[in-house]
Length: 405
Image (cartoon, rainbow, N blue to C red; front, side, top):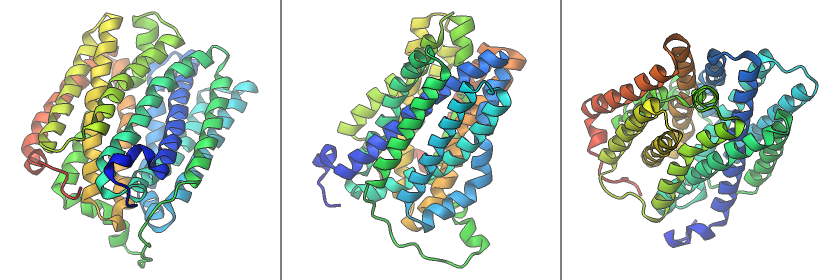
């Protein structure tokens, strides 16, 4: 892996990895739109929308130690491909249940649980693969490139899902199945450099190595926990079906546009970071981005204008993406390859599933207090967390550069 930084767009393995992540992300976003709309049609209960997030969170929590061990001990490419194959099977199951007329909330929850387990391995494996796909000098830009795939998918996926839903949810689910299968084949074609795993004898120390490393590294711990609480408090996307139907009176196409808006801002900032990666004031920039995320959430809660809401969601997405690129790069450069899988498994629990748990929080608070107060309280809470974390993790605030890049 000796390509110079200027050749990032000609780096074959990275581009195949990027295409695989884009296909998977599009499938995930399309499926989220279809599941949310179909479930709300079936039950008209905002708590059920939040339960989708909780049910996806539970297997990640249960499997956190297993996923890290598997990824550190086995070929990360194979682990990722198998996880994507299970995601394809889950989408196919949703298709068949819908076509056969046996779909209900319990069926959706059961399939979503399996998909959550698959994504636990998917998210952990794909995070650890990137340092083996590109040289260290390319890592910050590669993180932005891969992040841009997620955001491009978040723009295209919800919109495509909303349009295809007009023909029926089964059409959306079948398309997701095809995309996941394509991603599986692309991943298998990517060459990954991975240090030979040491078959250490099983012990509690080995099992909890990732947790121990994070606990003893204030920069990694601070970055992960900051994003955890920010996303947990800002998890309002599960309520977008309510905003689409009850606040703005738009159909599935409107829901797709609302879900895509944060990705527009995120994609814009990721393109900037691809060409001009952050080099200075890393810690302060991360805290500023989290504060902007909270402020945008507050504006979104108060807004009764569709245009202002879309603008607030775009700012929310841009600030979140800026923070994500910083966090992911920090975690990768600060973590040795021998424990990268176990650290990434904890990262998956801390951040990747915080969206799901945040969805549950938002749904529960919306049922208790109303939709707008649920979002408003979350946004204000993010601003408080950013201020507190600056004091609790001064080492993170003072980080100037990505030390190993």
